[in-house]
Image (cartoon, rainbow, N blue to C red; front, side, top):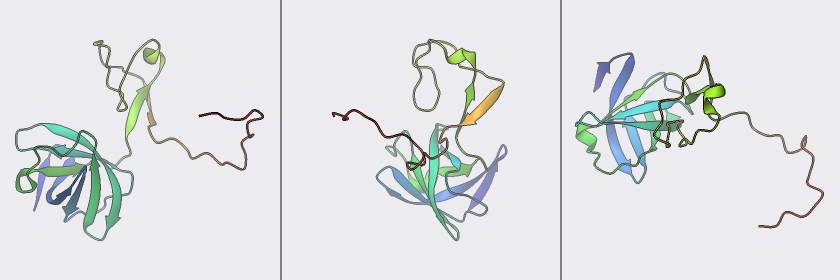
Length: 135
């Protein structure tokens, strides 16, 4: 069952396994895509698509799956990867992994945004450390 809310298409949750949910009936969803998990209460949690196979998507719920009821939870897909605003507003600020301020200040705004995932590092092109790395 699919319902429309804003510009995001919502599908029902088929199964919950730890921090992961399986969503059935998806179309046009891609790997690493940002998702919104809407609880029956109206609370919205962030999600990330980890796997897609035919009409199934596996989504990691960033704030956890506590309180989720598969029959009353809907998942929407944004059509883009997770992004955060970039700019001078970050200087001196403390934020969580989603770019939300943890210091009680206003939201950080920027004229441009960047993908949170970034580009992979090619280990053959980087210079190895000269000194031993102690952990």
